Image (cartoon, rainbow, N blue to C red; front, side):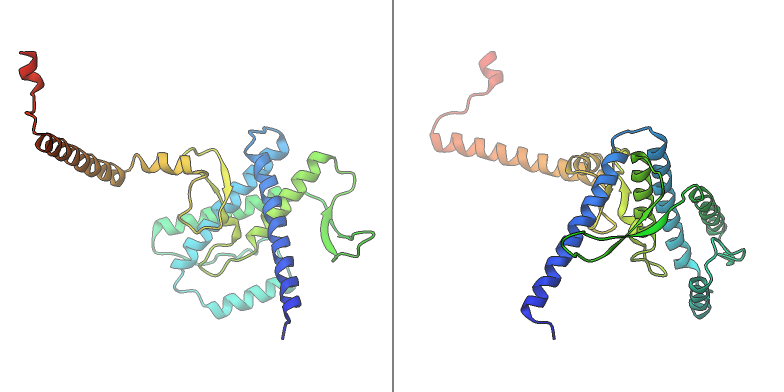
Length: 255
């Protein structure tokens, strides 16, 4: 049984991890959204877009792969963990009757192949990080000898995005990489969402702007204006009735 002090330590540690997680993600997205056209940023943006698209395709295909023997899937997964391969020749060896799903399967496999091809440029090795004086918990980082600052940022960003691709996903539920989204309104800003799949906008301004063009919003606006005009007219009528004065027509006054 965990005591109060133990529970508090766990909670504090959890909050510390969340803050570090948020800061790391924010630092990466700040650089991506700064319209930086440097080669390292362009490579990271391509990888982010490719990983998000690949995960979306994977979830869609998994939901429709009704003929899949999930026991064999588990066996293949365990085999892959014991003997890693970049992309086995028979990966995704499932045929779909629907032509669109079949095209998505081909696109998914081609995308994974291209991602693996581009990842070959990165050369790094794991290294333990320790605080020299305070004996904090050991952490693992991946470093490449002789890296300059730009390469360090790219290495860190690539590792962070790849880690999100392997966290949180299920057979037909998206991994954490799906939390990285591009605003559907401005189509420029990337953001990180923890509020579910319906969170599609980088800001409240983009959210309002997008919905202001929807038919649902326009219909609500029309109903509101009809009600507003009716209420205003009734208020004017009550005013003239209670004042005991005769309402003067503007047309009659001009005549």
